[in-house]
Image (tube, rainbow, N blue to C red; front, side, top):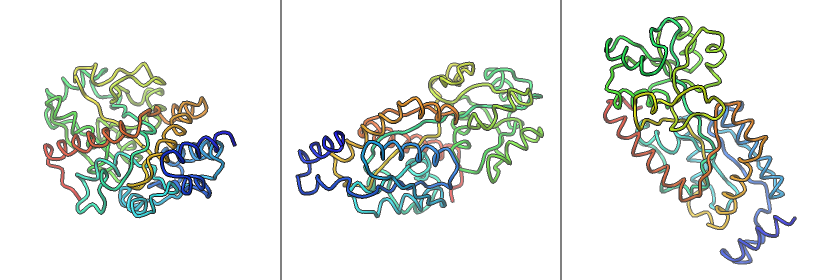
Length: 320
């Protein structure tokens, strides 16, 4: 109850006694725009449990899959801004949908109050064992020697992995042929079968095959090496200076949610993300915790929107 009393004091100072004393007086809904079982859902449930332990109210995970996250985003944006509805947002809902979904029914900047970046998951550039490249510099050289002849697969046109390779093509000055699939598992199957030569995949998907020698992992797409997999260099240190492309998730609330509630949630979520058990869960998923203030997360979202708008425009990707 000590934390609950402290929370009330903080809210009283900013929002007034009448509204502050009631929060949180009922369960908090955390909307996830994906089906149960994925990394976003797993982390959302882990964070929800830690918030329950600290705030004394249950956090109910509400899976609203579909529409590249638009269903979950719209549901959250239209909810009362009272701190009882949160969204476990993603790079698609908050950034790339702006460029890849026509007539997007919400505005990621206007309609939400950023709370914190929760986790970041880099892609691991992976090639077949038969591909004559044993590091990322050699892959770039191979692509330049064989323009358009190397095929890369992704889970779908306009998805994060697709856009990450399109960014690479621009920055490295190479030509790769995109082969879209209806899901990452199908792309992996064709990579293992040698029908495509390259994927940008989340590490847990390809690591077993890399360790068995069926595939070769060349480089990680984040700005820094992944602490759980330090043996893989970054693409930036492998000849493409400044390159960075990751999948990410973060917590947002409806716009106009009281600042004191956002500030309190930011502190509690960031504290939970530093717990060893949460860190271990993230590492198992090939992810690392985010650690931003609401303002920093808001600026990050705006930068990501602009970044992927440039990539979509330059590459000529056809949107939905």
